[in-house]
Length: 133
Image (cartoon, rainbow, N blue to C red; front, side, top):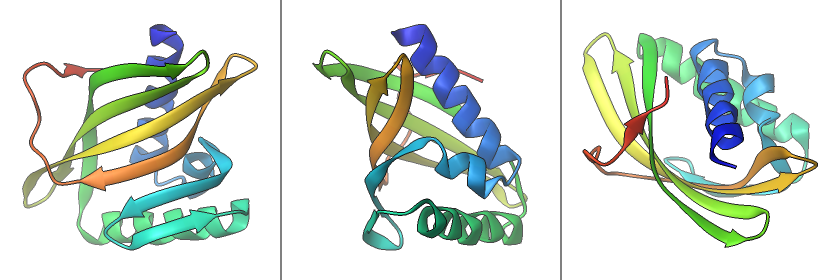
């Protein structure tokens, strides 16, 4: 489980690094919910989710995003095919690094992982987190 999940999040990070809003959105299982700086939002269509991530990617470009480091924290099994994953993000901006965390609820279906809930929150990176770049 852990290897496939790690590969899933590597792919997710790569989509952000490439500003690929459609690929980012394809990592989500619809319907899904996201709580971030834009507030609490639910998404029932791929088009709405791609539009949300297009706006995020534009903001990232405007902040001179230079890449990111993803650090995997605790993975908690919730059911046979559902886990919670605490991820630390170190975003590299022209002005310096910016750290935050996200709690993802992920579901595995046909051996493929997808995110159905993401909660972004302020928090530093923990020394227990492992880089998965």
